[in-house]
Structure formats: structure tokens, C-alpha cells
Image (spheres, rainbow, N blue to C red):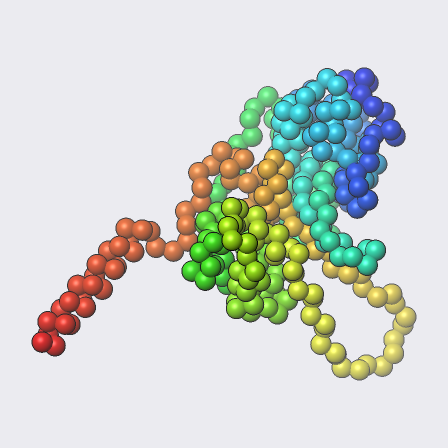
Length: 313
């Protein structure tokens, strides 16, 4: 059995726990545990997966902690293991907005599933839905995973447009196309909660230090820390009292992250739980016209202006 390979590690019940609210979270809909749960994985990945499966929720499964409790593997090897478990559908990394304790905050969690799940299942789960029990297709253990198809970028959203134009309002906060794509979902949450483009730009550009060395990191922190509250639902029509029922649970607000580097993004933009860079793909083409097209357009406008000036004289 694969788990026996880690007999020299720390027993599962003595594994270090993460800070309250963080750490491992078991995905719902798990099938009963069997000896063949991770037989489709290479031996090293199967051994670590079996160990993670036995850990309780809240366990610290960061690379540094795993390297301390599993002496046979170093941080680099364990980072590769977590990447491959993510590609195989057993693991996803993300942030969840929690409101317990009277202090709303974002916490980083790693969701683990004994049953391998496909990208569509993970996307539905991270969106707060309750996906059915549909396992991911079994991967061939001896072959590298096939490259995922490139997602087709939809038309530029309002949130992306605000981020792309931020540098015009405040040059210190100029963002690249990749930065805008990574922050688009967070900025979209502002607009969904009633903020307009002017308020979003002001929240990102006001009160900056004299020098901004990492505008994308600062923008992400401000988008998370200053996120407006959800608007109160409009009162519905008064109806006759019916059978007593409990109030609906609060909507779960989650945000996917790349398993390797932690960059946030939409689940559909992170196939296998990995961003473009960590999948070894070239950067996405920036939205809007190419630089050559812009220069040609400017030249045509200048020529038209000169013709108009000569005709006036």
C-alpha cells in the first residue's frame, strides 16, 4: 500500500495544524477509502496523497511543513508532488471569505479530494455550488498530462477595462495585461456589489506611497481589504405564512489560486489548478489593438489633420 512508504513520517494525528481557519479542507462527496484510491499515480505521489488523505481538516499542508514531517522528501520534490496531485484532480488551492468571529477576512485553504475530480467539478465547487459525484478521467501513470486547451478570452469586461485604464489615472499603478487578467475577478466583485468605475479607480489609486514597486500586489491587497459589503436584498412581497423552514445558508465566496505560485484567477483560467506561467505557456495577448495598429491609426489621424489644415488655408 502506498501509505506505507511514509511510515518514517510524523503520525497523522501529530501533524502540525495551520492557524485557525486555514489549512487542509476535505472536498465534499468523498467515496469510501480503499487501498486502490491512488493506484493511478506514480509511487511518490500516491504515498504523499495517502498521507494527506489521513490528515484532519485544518492540518498545515504547506510545502515547508510537509518537508519537516516527511524526511524522505525535500521542499522542491514536495512542490512537484502537489503540482501533480493538482493536475490529477485531487487538490486545489484557493481563498475563502469567512465572517466568523466578527472579523471578515480571506483565508488560504487547500482543498483535497480522495476521489479525483475534473476541472468542471472544481470550478463548480469553488463557485459555491454543490457539484455531483463525477470523478475525473483516470490519468495514465507513465505519461505526462496532455496540455490543456487554451481558454477563449471573452470580450473585455467592465472590471478589466477599469484595471487596464488605471495607469492613465495614476501612472504609479500601471498594470500589465497579465495583471489585469489575474485581478479581473476581484475587481468584478466590487462592481457586482454596487461600486462604479470611479469608486473602483479611487480605491486603487488614492493615498499611494511616493514609490510603488509592485502595483499588482498593492492592487490585489486593496481589492481584498476594501471589498464593499454585499448589498441588502430588496424586500419581497409579503406572503401568507407557510411551513416553518430554516434560513438559507450564506453564499460561499471563494477564489481559485494557482497551486504552484498562488496567483489568483478564475477556475476556468487555471486548468489542472495551474496558471499559464506554471503550465509553461506564453503570456496571454493583451486585449485591444496591437501596437503597430495603434501607430498606423495615429499616422492616419495626423495625415487627416494636416489635410484639413491645408484646405482651411
